[in-house]
Image 1 (cartoon, rainbow, N blue to C red):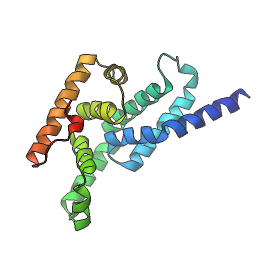
Image 2 (image 1 turned 45 degrees about the horizontal axis):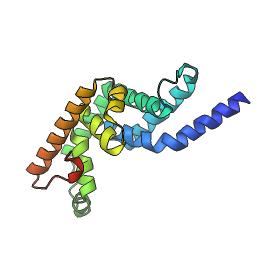
Image 3 (image 1 turned 90 degrees about the horizontal axis):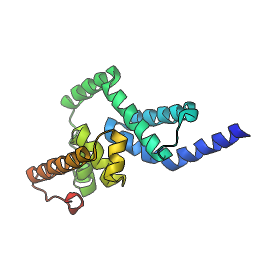
Length: 179
């Protein structure tokens, strides 16, 4: 009976947080397939280590922390570095400026999303967690294991980089990131 209850609990966690964690992982790894692999690995590890969960944080925070760590591990891996070089070479030798792509990229949300994805990881993670995921500054500090002031500084610098990006592109900066 206990095993079935645990199974149901983890099925509910997957339903509740699966897409959310997938989007979070994507902001780090910038590849949907890899993000899916990361999230799958997170849920497998969470299930395997379910007895180690101390309950000091919510399961949401616990899963976010595991996802962020798993993404960092992937970004340090040889597989990522090898894939990145291959993608850069492919981009250099292919023409991907179609009319359809140009039209799609004019959409404000896509432009902001792309700009956020271009930020260095330390700024991107706090921007995503704060603006897109709705975490409070103190929760972010706990998630990424740094001080509240560091989170505030990274938010400010991330916003500044986004403002500069849009100023250079000739676009106004959206109210969404002005505070």
